[in-house]
Image 1 (cartoon, helix red, strand yellow):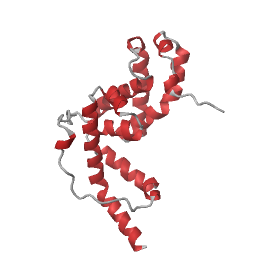
Image 2 (image 1 turned 120 degrees about the horizontal axis):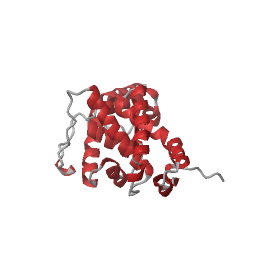
Image 3 (image 1 turned 180 degrees about the horizontal axis):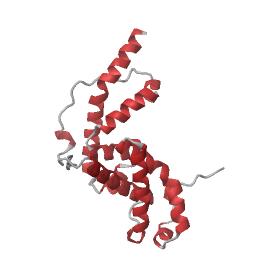
Image 4 (image 1 turned 90 degrees about the horizontal axis):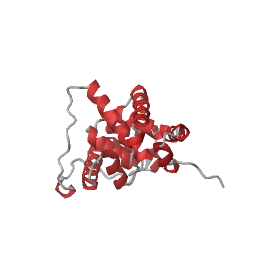
Length: 202
């Protein structure tokens, strides 16, 4: 049986000791998810490449200060999100990336114009057209909501790991995640309503 190596198999002790071979392994294992995060945060391959390169450069420079309280991959996600947000600020200095209010999820208003997607075939959610629609909707999310949604729902981090990566409380992660999901559901409701209408007329 072949056992795959993952970023969680990386030795924190070796990284902190300056083991370049271990850092090279981390780069090999984490490049794909970090690039994917950058692409979905920013929308262009060039920007994603910049985030990827800057993430590993910053990580290499700050290895000795890495305390190992989170996994190496979660640590890299935190650096990558910060790099993405800084790039957004440089490209759009007129846009202020504000903090979301910290109200509880129960206080959130109910979204409008929602549709039930339960009857759509799974292929609709996996189609290239649907993926493009989702990616476009993700890019319209406020940056702080976008980061939480990508880490939790796209990259599959736990609530705890997402909170570590973003320096948020778990309550704040849950609140922002709900906001992001409601926002996306509203954005995509008209698209999937059209898809549902097509299915019913077949």
